[in-house]
Amino acid sequence: MLNLQKLPRLKKGDTVATISLSSGAAGDPELLGRYEVGKKRLQEHFGLKVIEMPHTLAGSDFIYHHPEKRAADLMAAFQNPDIKAIFACIGGNDSIRMLPYIDFAIIQQNPKIFIGYSDSTITHLMCLKAGISSFYGPAILSDFAENVALPTFTKNAFEQLAFHPSQALRFETAPEITGEFLPWLPENSEKPRKFMPNDSYDIIQGTNRASGPLIGGCMEVLEMAKGTALFPELAAFDDAILFLETSEVKANPWWFEDQLRNYGIMGVLSRVNGIVFGKPKEGAYQEEYRKLALKVLREFHLEDIPVFANASFGHNEPKITLPYGRIAELNPAEKTFTLLESAVY
Image (cartoon, rainbow, N blue to C red; front, side, top):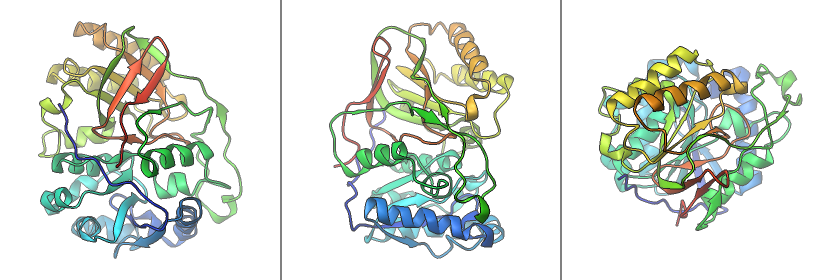
């Protein structure tokens, strides 16, 4: 079973770092203003002191051509005792290129919060390999810099998890969601995106409660990690709650089916105690994914494990924050997804 080191909680006045490990868009001239909005909200809403790593704002071209500098920023952020948490600016699709430059001992010896989603799944797997927990949650440009205002749901979900060592925390679905894309231009900064009413959890199958440590991420990014030293050993999935979501590319149902079946053939699905699927971006293919999940689980005679869908993590806003390695419970009868231990100390 996964056994990851618990993290020190955040407090008002703490210094945190922003970092560009995937796309370097935060440093592009047309997006610097949006980055500054996200930074300001970390300061104003959470009382944090925010600093950049040396290459956080180096721009897309530099970041793309220098994965070794991205890795150096990450190592420096973990090594700096003044930095209490590391926030990803945004995702992308090539942070796997940092792998040759990572010193896992540095991460292991300096446990602290790392938070991000999407391509940040790669950095979460680095933390997992180093034996520390991390948080699958909001990023600077997409979440903290949301047009007009930081969503209260995102704010509260992160604050409750990272600042308060609560022994039980209910992971709710967001009452309203948006996946609408408005170009990140200054003239759109005060234009609210269209939010739509959202449903509660969809119980795809299962009747009995199940619990276990959380593990998972973005399905497209997990595919990049397969066959590398980063992908978790099969034992890491023993008795776990597996959380999976698809990205903004709105993966075709046949791809979703193939990848889920691959987890079955690998032996992952037979090891976990339950599965939680994030709501696809804008609900794309949600019903198709549901039917295919049932189909694949039947193929492996896994009709009894609880499977939830429509969870509010990943590529919609607002979102919850999920802590890797901490024990959570799925209760199909009550339609609840609950963290059973504190994520921080």
